Image 1 (tube, rainbow, N blue to C red):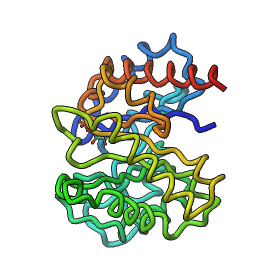
Image 2 (image 1 turned 90 degrees about the horizontal axis):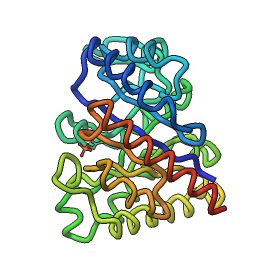
Image 3 (image 1 turned 60 degrees about the vertical axis):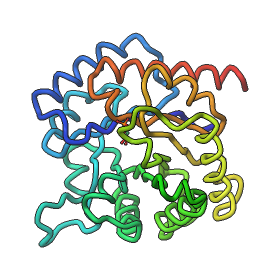
Length: 263
Ligand code: 13P
């Protein structure tokens, strides 16, 4: 069975002091929940990583970076490497967020190099995948997503694929008024799992987590978690305050409990 995931990317929010406040409040709010069956992460901005990791040490909440370079060190002004993330206390690294692709010219070829580095360094990559509104309108979502996932995973042997978290985040649903519909999310997740099955075989595809992101809220979380191939939630705005993320964590922990009882 796949462990469900509750994650949030803070984007360019929460400096050091706010991150520590957030961490303390989150720990207090989730202390009474049984989170043993789920994985939880927050992705602070780089300057807050060490402080957040320290504040969350010993809690069920892990920390990750929002981006990373594919080299360990060198003349790469403004970049951050895998060893630096590890030293700051990170367990995860987010790659290919649509805001990185759109505003900073990242490509899936570069993402593939970053995935390879993260995997060799011992960081868990969270690889974002998503079609644009136009690609969706042209009926190309399935093809675009297949290309993105196959390119990103291109350097990895099949048996390591389940160590990677895939995040389906339709670009048109990020920062939007509403999430994608459950029916549409279900269709896309099913298709992504079929791509994994084709590339890596049924066993690997069954073990690989595909989480959903894009205008998730505590209110719509349950309906999205009910979708068969959805293995967790990746939240932006609704989790920028600890109270909001704690509510999401509670929904994911409840969903994990229900899935266990169903088995
Ligand atoms: P919103 O939840 O604000 O739409 O952002 C989602 C996101 O970008 C998660 O990576």
